[in-house]
Image (tube, rainbow, N blue to C red; front, side, top):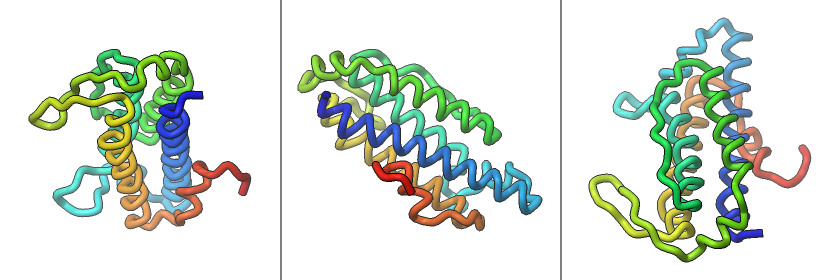
Length: 172
């Protein structure tokens, strides 16, 4: 098994599953309490922060870019167009399916090779490993936890274990 797969793709897959679990709990909470789902979709932690829909988009987009960069293909253009929980689930499921299809031999062959990628207004040089550890993974987890925080702040009864259970190798 490739170290890149073990230490990058495995946590990405688990994080996406954690996000989906948290969103499902939020959707159920909204239904049970007569809360319009769009209340959550458009919610943010503070006025100048992007809403839940953006957080979900970036989590999936970050994972997709790791896949593309690690296999040396141009990342697909994606747009932040999700407006419903079903849109969120479709985006997450599509991202999981793509990550699960990765050819581990391609990852191994690309370890240590360099490429250039935009990083805000500059272009930086990375290896698949440095891109994952220094940029993509921190970005992925920032937006994953922000999505959790938004839902928690809106009253969704999620706790730390709800977030962690999809990362664990044990059944709870």
